[in-house]
Image (cartoon, rainbow, N blue to C red; front, side):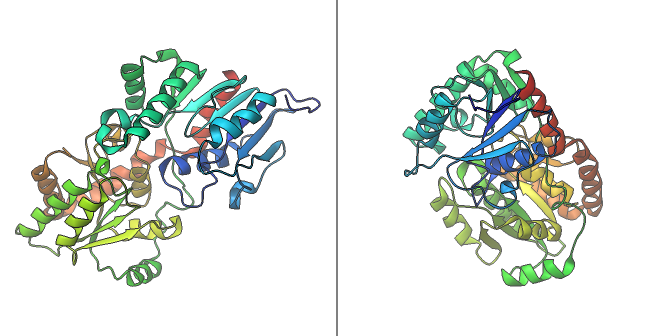
Amino acid sequence: MFQCLNVTMIIGIDASRANKKNKTGVEWYSYYLIQALKKIPLKPGDKFVLYSRDKLKGDLSHLPNNWQSKILSWPFKYIWTHIRLCWEIFFNPPDVLFIPAHALPIFCRSKKVITVHDLGFKRFKKVYSFSQRIYAYFVHWWASKKADKIIVPSDFTKEELIQLYHTKEEKIRVIHEGYDKERFNLNENKGKINKLLKKYKIKKPYFLFVGRLEKKKNIINLIKAYSMLFNSEIKTSFPRLVLIGKPGFNYQEIASEIEKLKPLIYQIGYIQTDELVHFYHGAEAFIFPSLYEGFGLPILEAMACGTPVIISNAGSIPEVGNKAALYFNPNKIEEITSTLKDFLTDKSLKYQLREKGLKNIKKYSWQKCAQETMEVLLTV
């Protein structure tokens, strides 16, 4: 154990994902949760330790009293968790080890809490390589057997764990994610929106998608539905389609579909959050056609910006969107097309979805997520 006087409880957190420069879903979850946990007062003697392979970056490095950073250097790209972190935890175990993303160390003498975000690799095997599937299967099987508590972001993921791994229900705690209220809000800056659109040579109006450009996100069906929409008779200004995100599995086929409608589709790639918020503000609607999600953080971000949300009825998505979104079956291209057409032709829908979205997000916050997570960490 750490040799500290009057320490009543030490909680270690794997901050390696939160410390990444270019973050996506699970990295943002780790980052925002850690930042929110910092705001919760600790009892005298309690202590948090953030483990990372590199020096903590940006706001993550600003540590309150009783918080400590521990850099665990590792020369290789992979297996930091299973060797370097494992080594540290074996010889200097905290009372509780929390893994907000990725995998539990093989050997660990501490109480173990892990967040399982989704089990997409089980449902969409063709989206992952053989080695990725084997690794993901082992990681989640090990977590199901060895974790003292498993946090999941939705009831949907809870049911997936029970069904696919026979995880004991009492071991699982559903804690919804939040969104960054300081960035994603109604404070629209039209000057910055126009400047950004000029930078990327984008014309308004436009639909917006945010996420990895891969098969699981159902980008091909979205583009095919969008093409059908373009060829239909719509008596309104036709919106472009803006795709923001890194290329993923099956990207070549996606790129081929984009090429067919190149003047109408803009592919931006990964961008920083400071720019992303302006894309949300400028969009006619946010479209999320994913086939499978454990939560769906961009849905909350779009709603917080007052952007109407049009999303699939798959996975956890209806749980997050609730009654504040327009839904479609992601496997039916014609239905995606008709849903988008309904949105464009019914002018009242935009206002209705905006107001419902703003009401829906009131129940989500990172502070609430952190408070509930802290309860788990202190009582495991």
